[in-house]
Length: 255
Ligand SMILES: C[S@@+](CC[C@H](N)C(=O)[O-])C[C@H]1O[C@@H](n2cnc3c(N)ncnc32)[C@H](O)[C@@H]1O
Image 1 (cartoon, rainbow, N blue to C red):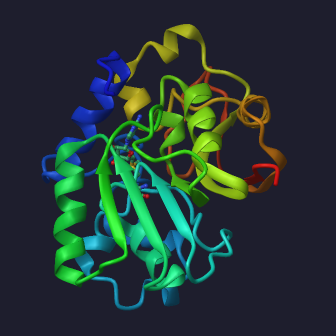
Image 2: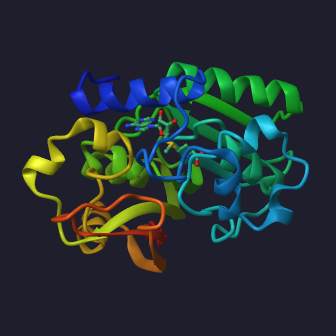
């Protein structure tokens, strides 16, 4: 199922343009976050990126490193929400090995094309990219060990549905490992109405307490904000905006 929510449209348009090389920034014009290759690879321990082609690292659009805190094991099944060009999916694929599977879900056709081209070039066989929205995952219930996501849930107009879906597809005892933009305080309704800024990973972000509250409401337990660092060096913050952070969050579906 896909929706024609104006936010989805704005987000699809932005990431379609980035994937097809017509734009290079996702987090705002003044920022290096989520768009330009070289600064963004600093999100990761460089040894983690060894051997990844530049076509993958140059399309790193995240705001953190969710893979390193996921404790992935050989044979596990991982879903990467909003997989983009596939950087985290490919990193996870190395860790789950040939007996594991990584399913990257993204709604932007040009981004899926990039990810699939990268997959073919790398000869990776344990990653599958599926077209879909993270609010209605194209994944069976109770089949996934780990939900991963990097700088995507802030973009969703229906975060409650995203967490409900993540909970549905996880096996009992499954876990979540997320990097995302969160705030301290709220954007005004007027700021939130700016779909362009929303698509830049800014005005769709919500207060960290509301974020973890939605996870709790979906059924997650042991929710931890592992780290929360100011994102204001990479996201232009204007007067009246709340403080903006990049956070890493982990949680579990009860066993
Ligand atoms: C900021 S980029 C992050 C990409 C990737 N996680 C990374 O770290 O490079 C956001 C990605 O999420 C996808 N996306 C945003 N909202 C989505 C939604 N509701 N459903 C599916 N994909 C979505 C976009 O198409 C885009 O590829």
